Image (cartoon, rainbow over all chains, first blue to last red; front, side, top):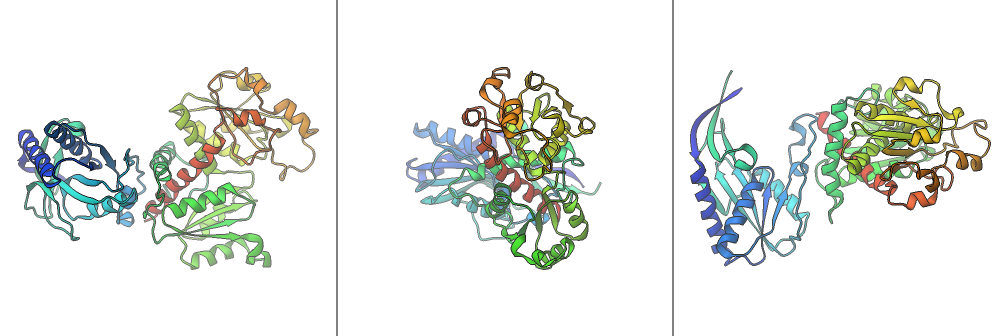
Length: 184
Length: 304
């Protein structure tokens, strides 16, 4: 199956504006940055979390700790997962999450299973006072009762479509597109 | 990865690489306060050990538990094996209880292979006679990688009782595949005749074994396997083949010292060397758990 690009959902400017808006919302909702930490879900949640932290520190003048969460070991689909493929990514949370307000950051919210696994993985590190969720794109089709607290853009999709988020840090450019699987 | 891990002789460099890379992620789990992940929930493992073991068996058991597997140990001398049950029947009995992975250590070379052909559960060789001990070699390679940052273009000297050592065989096969150069050194009576065919270079003097060497893997004298006297006395062995500080003056300053354990202190390695910063013997034990977690993860994932 090949994929065909259908439409551009976010250009580099739009993506950047969305993140700035989410940064403001995070500060507003938490009445500042006290006790706040950001944790990005591998892989594209990580650069997004770092950028959000930069925006927040520019606005509030206070640097925020940023962690990395890898959920491979917490997935619920090991039985159907890519066969025999190892994992080289690991979590890196260089601070205690005990009693902190944690904002989990990911690129796309879809079935909710990734976030479910991320919550499990996060709770192994301690007991945060609160966990919030920020995503760049919410594309619907939830399979478990999970919702995002901060959303860059809601995009109605069909299951056959694919949302592709590209970020400069990983892909060399900022761009969100909607793609469709087409038979070769 | 195939169904089983029976040895490194037939493993590919990509498979070894995959295990070592995954082990790194597993080691992060070991460093957490809550060192348990739900990855292999609902899967089970039996450790079937026909020979004594502390670290390998405990390491496998904990590796399984840290990944949320259910693990059971069978001590052979208190099991039906003592009543005369043969390996294949024991294997089929274990399998009938719904076990996903059988870890076996056996005094006879090939026993794990035989078991693997007869049951559908994954079989991991935890040491078969003088043949292979693949997970030990994997954890040795992981420890080298951690200290040196690479495996290719390294010179590794395996010193001591090569003849009776399954650790030596797995190490030679594994390290050669990963691009390292392997030298062996020990009493001539404990150097098997065909060892060079496996890719190892036989050294005739200690100095030759130390020259340009990045890693020394000191083997245990396998007193339980050696029949007749192969060297005059332990004292003489310690003098001629023991790794001590004086001897290491001729080695590279940053030489890494490995020992698979258990150690015969003061015989193959001196206590001073063990305590020196160059030896990573306890780190090897930690790495053993990480490597076995990686292996269980990959085998169960691959078996689907």
